[in-house]
Length: 347
Image (cartoon, rainbow, N blue to C red):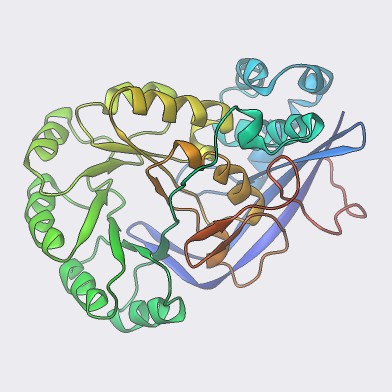
């Protein structure tokens, strides 16, 4: 098995601002595993908040090179603990390799990845489109540029959060979800939840910091008018049980938990506990979005607009149009990086 990586600079259609910063371009690392004439694709993006750079990710991925024969012969779920140990627990780097391995094995089996997992593709949720923090005028412009999405996720954590939501509500009847990215307090969230419910908001994502005391999460869980979905508080498999009783649901990010292997298990466990399930994304290309989309049969909510936020996407795969997720006709995740054969880079 051969391992190659490709660095991409993904320009955004608009500056993307959340409560802790702004980006105008996303640095992405594409991973390709090749053997038997089959390519498996994965992706991971640079992330300042989680202290991951392209250089650190490439260095971690390089550690997996001696494992390539084993990755070819073993099921990705069986291989995952070895990858985690070998890469020193770097979940972001492991996620790209695990994603590519699932893609390769599903393609070799001649099926889409969701079918490789034994899932059934019946009714799956639509994706939301994210409106990042900006002036109200700019946020309205962003919504009007994407007018036909059935669901919008609004980033909050400002001094005029209710004014933002109220102004956007006047422009559309679409469903709203809000994400404070750890920017609120308990009392603030409880107060805002009453007003947000009146504005037809479905749920609030991660209002409190991850390090907030458990007692604060308990008080919010019991006092809020809207469901609370964990994001930063639910990064790994161990966090699912910790979130039970403190949150009404979880948002799984494939890169944060370490790949499709743990993401699958986290969603299964959350459903066993009676929690709502969601998969989100970073700003990333169609390669990562296509991989995450394979989990849709396990979800109540989807936030897979990462590639839709780009000015241009050099990859191809799953297409998300106005919330509708259209699978590729290809096997595996159905994604690839066209024209990359002439530019391989060893990690």
